[in-house]
Image (cartoon, rainbow, N blue to C red):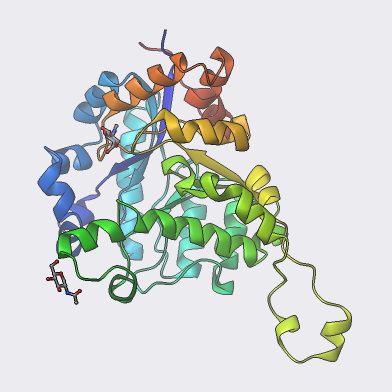
Length: 345
Ligand SMILES: *[C@@H]1O[C@H](CO)[C@@H](O)[C@H](O)[C@H]1NC(C)=O
Ligand SMILES: *[C@@H]1O[C@H](CO)[C@@H](O)[C@H](O)[C@H]1NC(C)=O
């Protein structure tokens, strides 16, 4: 029997996004390959619920799909999502979309969404359109707000900047291969992994030891590299004074950042979104705590039905007990987000 399922990398398009030319160009490949994608993205009601039913998903935590929105577009997208949640509180909860180019505005909108709209966190693009990452000191108020509000931040892949595309992903191969390698085939996943390392190295988790970060796609390849990163990260030193020529600082060097493995165990949650296979799960189940692993689909870019098949494969794989399967399917998400999956299927 299938356990109830909660999913949390499940996207929609606000009215602003569905009419934005930039965003529709970014999604051109997906629109070519996924039938009815725009309908599925813009719907927050009947179509979405029927698609959830097909994959036995009891409860979705919905977030905006990647793509940069202005502060006022974020507000109206969040208000739009709030109305949908109010109409179906037993099926939906929300992650805020935030104007990440503006570190002050994104902290304020996160706070509004959590305190006034009851959202359970935020899902944000992995970097700003100009290639800014959130280990920058300017983002400390944002992370502090997330930590104080006690809500997780989901770091979601986004397209490379033009510079990243030309330096890392352009070669003697087709433009379509270049676009794919830079994004969903590999590049934007590895970019999330690198971002997590940047956050750890910056000492963010030492300043905010209760901060919660979620990453998708089976941990964005980090589980596979975990031993190596854990071993090498213990040599990382603190940024700052040590790198200046300062005698006093040399006498009292700042403490190094917490080793990566400790942050992995304490501050990071991962989801199974996107492309399921029991193979990476076998690794994750050996090196990541069971209460850190959460089921997700990545609707409508992936199908709820395919996810259900993965859950069934996992159930019969011999890798997890029934209790452990329930943790991954819904219990861990219930605990992390304070939501409830009612058994409906
Ligand atoms: C690029 O690829 C083509 C086709 O394989 C080949 O003929 C050409 O020599 C390559 N050019 C470079 C600079 O590698
Ligand atoms: C995941 O990727 C594999 C390999 O490309 C493919 O065979 C499989 O259908 C994909 N599964 C899903 C659920 O997308």
